[in-house]
Image (cartoon, rainbow, N blue to C red; front, side, top):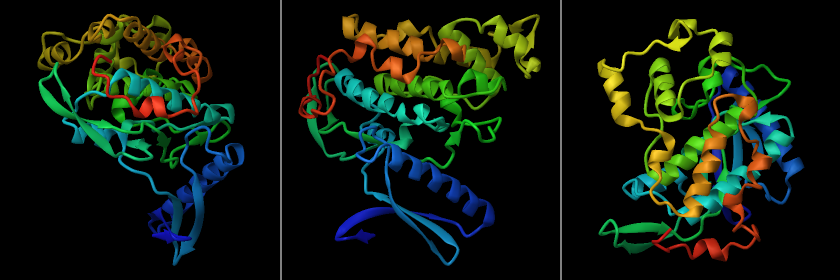
Length: 316
């Protein structure tokens, strides 16, 4: 679609009452983002306008490029270099404007983080002995606010796409802004490793994977949860010798064991992941605090992008 001579993206919502109401809520969120961040300094996609077309709610946006997931997929799931992850992570954390304005995204995942421009260069990776794609510009936008929820609004019991779902959501303990932080931790791990940290579709298996990666769930969370069927005598009821148990053991290992290098920047990255993936929401690092983490110390001038565009250093 054209707008003033420029292409724009158009989201068209079905002409059904429940979808129309959901679209109005999304428009309300997008208007709040424009109000609080008119210059797009916090990397959230901005609505250009909206209209009703014979009952279909239509929302126009700036035209973006591939999602960070699609680029990863098109690159044979070769992980992003750490310096590119640092820049993308910094931008995602800058979306703290949402939390500062009593808003939780609730559906953060690599598919909902889009590159502004996904043009790439092909470089040879001597470690893997193959060519790989390197995106030239790691500027991103956070998209899809259809499930975003203000603090004062009704909170659905189930939120987030499965693989990025926080433990408090699975255990039905209630949720708030920290569930976004957990999702971001899962996303950043995926950028680093090239695969999903929690590859499952079952609640109990998901919890077993979490315990394999992070250790036992806190007793406080177990005692308070509404899903006592998952537990026996204060422990996750899980048979490691079963087919599912062997699958989890094969797929998951302690977080620190995924380190691909022992340099300080890799160690700092995993320290940040550990703080983002704390079980208890109140212990989880906030996005505003994450921006001050040593991993981001190299980001002295966030608005200067050239250093991130020239990011083909294979040692990273």
